[in-house]
Every structure is written in structure tokens, then in C-alpha cells.
Image (tube, rainbow, N blue to C red; front, side, top):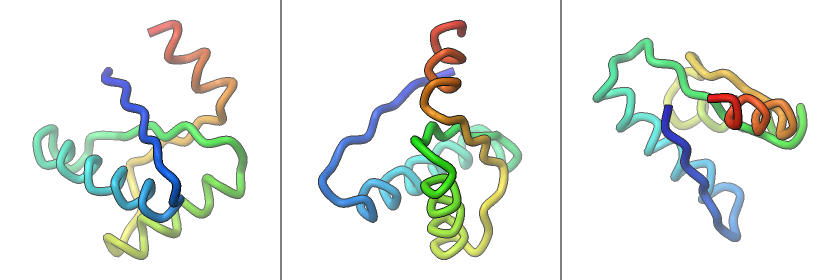
Length: 77
């Protein structure tokens, strides 16, 4: 499992950069590869799903973890 941190001043630019990186990874790993996204709250999870669907036409194969559970999961990997 790889771990990437995206930083920026614009939420839209961060989301778009992540979507582009995720799509590049899927081209290498295959269309059914899952991506895990760590978000701070349910509203951000929904916004990311909608942003991805808007950009790509679909939002699929994404697992969302909230910050506490996502970091715990990463530390155990």
C-alpha cells in the first residue's frame, strides 16, 4: 500500500489532483483497483464522491475512512 499526502490552498485543486493521480494508478493496476481516501467528516466524503462523479462520470471503487480510523489503519499496515 502506498501513502500520499496532498497539500494545497484550494480544495477543488486538491480534489482534481487526487482524481488525476488515482486514475493514473488505476491504469497501471486495473479498473477494479480500490483507492482509500481519508477525509475529516461525512460532508467531505460526499463532496469527494460528487466531485469524482462530475469529473469522470462515475464514482466507484473508493473506500472512505475518517481521519482517526484511517490513520489507525495506516499505522497497522
